Length: 105
Image (cartoon, rainbow, N blue to C red; front, side):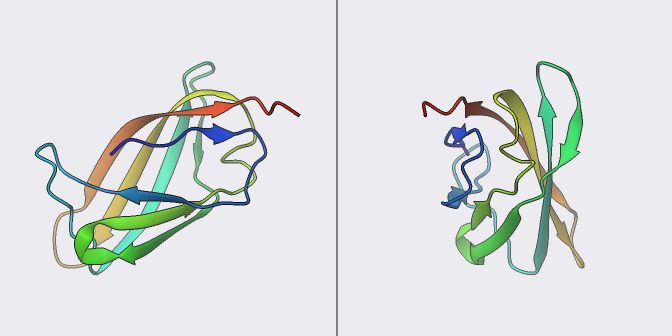
């Protein structure tokens, strides 16, 4: 699950993400609640994702991330951890790299 780069301050478009396991099989998100954290690789500061994580096609592991102001509030390199919490099965988590680029204009 690779993330597209964000742009500092840009919140107009949601990023579509497909959550898969190591073999490329989609993680079924049916019945889960999504949340996440962002850790700056420059400062090591951790913050909660303040945008919206919305499941779009649960059985195929597809969800969207509409950035909040804090999500793209600073440029740099980050680790993002997504969490899927289920009522009737173990929770799942995934950590991946993410970059927020400086705006050109």
